[in-house]
Structure formats: structure tokens, C-alpha cells
Length: 118
Image (tube, rainbow, N blue to C red; front, side, top):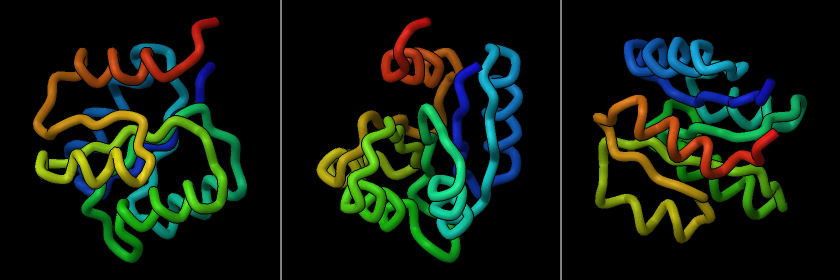
């Protein structure tokens, strides 16, 4: 079962994504701020990260930048309501980008395209 770290501070969005991931056979771990995200990635193994940019404590941008500077290569998909941030996120090393709001099927396609098939 593929482990996905979901980093999202909006409760309704997080719940929607978490339920969808479980329904499709993924094992999601939810954290609500950038500091928790970094701690999880440093101490646990994940196959993919879904990362909101607008996070408390440490921004999603800073999380992405930190992980890439430290050599982490796991796929990171950025989720944000700010479509103008796409080039910034990709420039910092994001593997994919999803605009909020989105259909779950769209998110699922992006996730599947970045995970090796078993």
C-alpha cells in the first residue's frame, strides 16, 4: 500500500482528500502545518507528498525548498488555490501542481502518474 503524506491545513479539503485516498487503496497520513510535514518526512517513509503552499508555522514553499535542498527526491505534488504560483512551485522542484478547487479524479491521475505501478 502506497504511503502518501497529505499536508493540508483546511479541514474540509483535508477530509475530502483523505477519504478519497483511503477509498482508492492509499495509506494517507495527514498533517496540518509545514513543521509537522518536515518532522514526518524526516522520521517516516512516504511514496509521495501532497503539499499545500499556504501552511501555518512553515510555509509549503519553504517545506518544498528545504526538502529539495536536502536531496529528498520523493514526488511532491503541490495543491494550491493560487494558480499563479505554478511556475514558482515547479521551479522549486515540485513534480506536479493541482489548482484548487479540483475534481478528485484529476488529483488521482496526477498521483498515479508519479507513483511506480505495482
